[in-house]
Image (cartoon, rainbow, N blue to C red; front, side, top):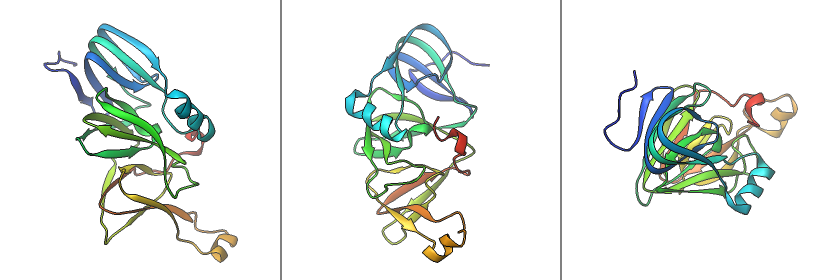
Length: 214
């Protein structure tokens, strides 16, 4: 049973949904609102010409809406698990657009190139969040957070990666020889390699082909 909230902002309503008490403005992916009460307005939010062009070319990015007013709203997407990331001043988090559910209006959002990664399900462009506030991320299954250090870089499947510390260096890693690929391969030929100091979030499943364009 949903109880009245005491303070503005987002909380987990349950593992599959986010409750957001709006007092002013917040942002969410288009079509993710499942219920609301109070005096709220929902408005499509543009990404600017550059952002729209990148999204049109790559299929990545994020279609957003602004939610304004006073009230409570609930957000979910295809019964995915939800978790909340708190971003502090100086932090930058890169997130695949398909994994973003909603976030505080105090966070800045930009579509940026994933340097050194020209191919893969993770896309050429990803969403980068900075500033101060909370971000709700969705994931099929329970995500795994893997530390990345200068001594131990991490390679992740581009179809499984959810996000990573934006200051990490990115490149493509080939874990399969050309000869092996010619003979049919292992299905794990190229990964995204992350180096530096930070962390990467991966989900316990790879992107399903028919959902890749959603």
